[in-house]
Amino acid sequence: MTNSASESRIEEMDLLLQEVRSRNAMPLWEVNAQRGRPTVQPFLWRYLDYRDLLYRAADLVPMELAERRVFVFSNPGIDKHSATSSLYANLQIIKPGEIAPSHRHSPSALRLVIEGQGAYTAVNGEKSYMDPGDFVTTPSWTWHDHGNEGDAPMVWLDGLDVPFVQSLDANFYEQYPDSTHPLTKPDDLSLRMFGAGSLKPTWERRDSPNSPILNYKFERTYEALKALADDTDGSPYDGVTVEYTNPLNGGPAMPTIACFATLLRAGQRTQAHRHVGGTIYHVIEGSGSSIIAGTRFDWGPKDTFVVPSWHFHEHTAEEEAVLFSYNDSPVLQALNLYREEAMDAPHQEETEVFSS
Ligand code: 1HN
Image: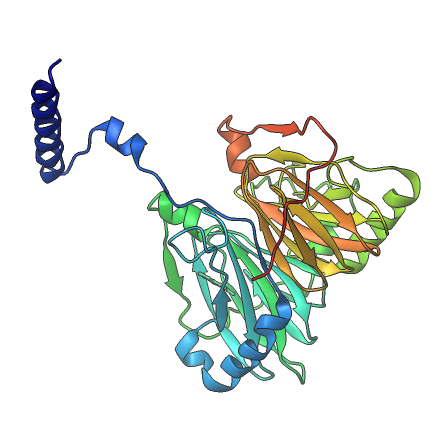
């Protein structure tokens, strides 16, 4: 082609592109060539950077205005306010005497209690008082309210699949006419009925994609982790990790969110691997660091960090550490999209140290 022939071809291509765009379409080769598309970044939110702000919000923002007094962690790599493309990680604070009124929504939710005592969550007529480290489920479309009957504010981490549900245009929400939903069951009945592991009540024939257990108490989780750590090595990649399962079918606690507790022994360093399913980690206790795609993240109690999908990661515990984590792997597994692989070498090179 002569110079002028190729120039006129470029002009014609530009014109074509403009005309296609003006008709609300886009040639695929242009879509694919777009650089710098937003992607979830590895990131860490230090609890101490937010605690004072939460307490300030507790004084300034009345519950009637906020409905839930929540800070939504925003991943700097994406243009929506969420921790990963599919999941929320939030901090919520509730003051003594307050009630966060009853509502229900199609997104599934979980709580991991960070500080305080004396607050409860009530889900579909069952109430459970929450203590630090407890993992609480609020399945899709269940009525739930929170109340603080203690004498100090209470803070927890909320996990929700709101961005995922929104991406499917399936987000529904409803307020209960009263601030609380009537209680119809003894407190913590679900844990007494279904929390005995292999012993299941015979007269209960229900199956459900949601775990019937409202509150997986930390004490029991820690006991189980310690017992495993005494007798087994655990996973070379994840340490001694247990999944909070649905006792009705052995599946994940909720159909869209898998939740885990990990114990890392003092001095333990796991091997690097990667998998799809961007994962949110929350440090229940202990301190250490994680290398995520070459960057070292130092963490301590109550911190929260994100390992994005398909990023190599490995963890090192300085002292014994217990981590809570959750991701959308049940969705990926159900749709045959799940994959994982070990890195060729056991450990990554540390090229950077994260500072926010
Ligand atoms: C929600 O219902 C709660 O019930 C917390 O505590 C955070 C974020 C988005 C949508 C609903 C709660 C939420 C939420």
